[in-house]
Image (cartoon, rainbow, N blue to C red; front, side, top):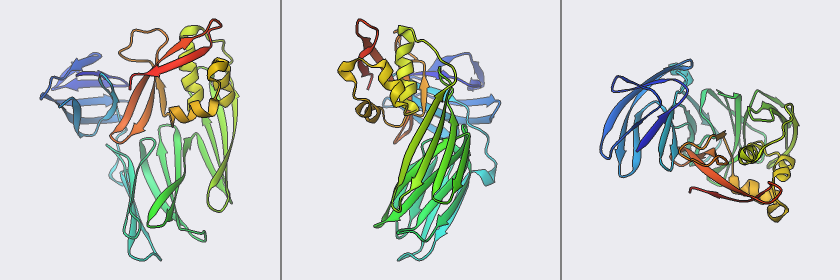
Length: 304
């Protein structure tokens, strides 16, 4: 199994890793790291084609192996938050755990587990009453700046109403306003407005590109993924051939993209990769693109 490292200085069994190392089936190594955001360590084991992780380290799983990255050092009070939820049929508690797998778990009258869209720290939980159903609000810090999420407790389970992060989050009355800058080729800036409708949020989105850029063919696949990550419908449409011009269907196909990355392990100059949240953590998917005679994207395929 090939394992790459990024974002810090990593060590395997005490020896510095320049860029990557290999892990054979059944083999274990103690991997540690230091970076500008903190330090940590974990024991990595290759078992039945899977990478098992015991400890605190960032992992992105690729088809060919894994990529390791630093996680911020958390002080004890930044790792966890709990909230008791009253007025239900039995004692109910919401708990947020940060670190190896960031998630919210609700137990009691409501049973629910949700893997958060991105790593967070310093979480805070609060309860919004006076609605048709109790709503749990989660605020936290994250790499983008500020994270916020709302979960409605209904019918013995819960439903995610909103989950976003950005440079700033402002909640006033029935509106949540999020400002977010994207580190993409167009330097997009997005303003998201979520308006509460009594049982759901309705979202409007304004996107401004501050770095206009003409893409060459080798950049267009990555540009499409960046536009999809920002939910920039006009940006997506401008890169597609009319034959696959269904923007909504394409955005649904990609899902919630957390990061767009170079396609590690691919020799294709037009390939690019996304990082999304899966059941086992962060997962990378590599995409390859085909073009028509006008260099518009006419087809794409992924390594999954």
